[in-house]
Length: 266
Length: 323
Image (cartoon, rainbow over all chains, first blue to last red; front, side, top):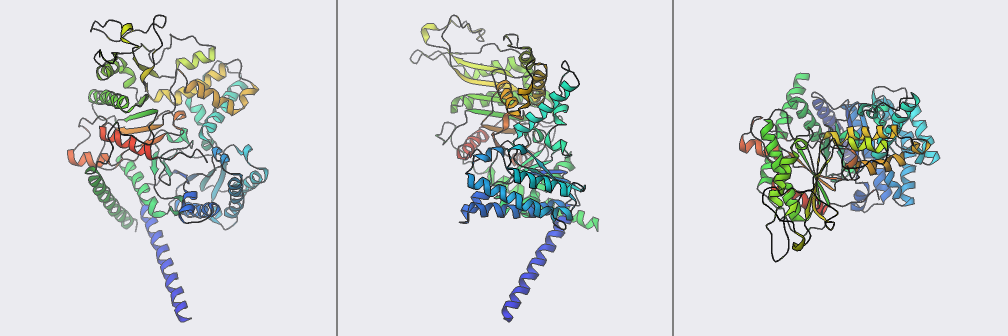
């Protein structure tokens, strides 16, 4: 029993030391330039699960834990806006069981992190759900609307949950909006400019600043129809070989250092 | 205490630079890329080359490095069996040097008449300049508007059919106008698209204006799916360029001695939905140290090792398409 007590004490000390070291490191990083908007493609949950002989759903659950962890890091660094690719429109092609499990996970966890005292409330984060929400099951859509309502008053930071999202759909939606706006003004001979479309992209409508960094995990070096319009200019694209459930501050540090170097050298 | 945090951050950056430098030096001694014509699990049908530049370097030298890169890439694509090449530079430098590019491609791809195989010289049909597509007849005012502002120039390298149907080559000007009524249709051996930032977001805006002016824009166009479909046909159609399978991002003028993460410099966003990227971010560290480069030094065209490594990586990549 004494050994158990000692073991628990040592674990607690180690966890506390690790937590304090992380806070210190974050304070050091925050002494330099910090990106205003970072996007994540949370890739690798299923490969992570297979690698650890776990069920796919377990991989997604651990992916959610990684999301919480990374969100907290971003909030401590005062990153104003975080966008995450939670579900692609193409992902509806997956098995019905997996799609249903993902929808249930989203529904359950969204409400959880929006609760009073939880992560989004603690850091004053406003949640926006971006995507073709008409494709979502009604109960998931209702849960998302509720989560958005719960955080609408928050104004310190923004979390864009892209679900279900596709960049070409985003561009087409913006174009449709721009065209309809011109038609309403009875201006069929004018021109639609690049800025007209830019102002109607889902991230712009949600009040997000320009995208500074896009991170994709699991080693894949593609954008897979994510934020194409937003990241094709001077956004730094970072491809990490780590699977999303394993992504941590250790993987994020070089990304922040690269960004700082860019700002200092410009 | 903020000075202490800043000092610690500087130390962290110094350590990071050292680690990055050691990695890049180690990698520079390892060339594990396969030969150009090696059998790979898969090959891109369409390769894009993004040539990144900086404003500080001499424009004549940059232009020469760019044209050299196009020439090399076209030659390697042809050797590797890649049918389509898109070359991008943000400022449109290449778009203004199409005649020279044609001449350089001809020099590289030109084959001497071969009696035994019947292969012969390559011809390049004249293509419309980027801002004028007078050779085509638009179907509608909207389509005409879109055609005029896609800013894509296309060069098709064709193999002439059979030696009996060869046209005599007087050796002076091998850029010929193709006359469809007198010959069999010829399959291009390589198609090269030259694009710039104007081919991207401005082209999408132009296509959107086309929709606005189209008399058929109505309830049907409320559906974003139909807009996507229409844009696929316009932006990736005959007067645009299709989505590349693989993109090599190459810094013509690497800056400083710090690694530079990948950026897309305004590449057309519509076409990069599923494009695989290849970029050696450590090249800048390597080159600037060994060559002691400053921002005034000439820069560098695309290298063959870089090209081969890109093909190797692409061959090993897995596509799940959402599943």
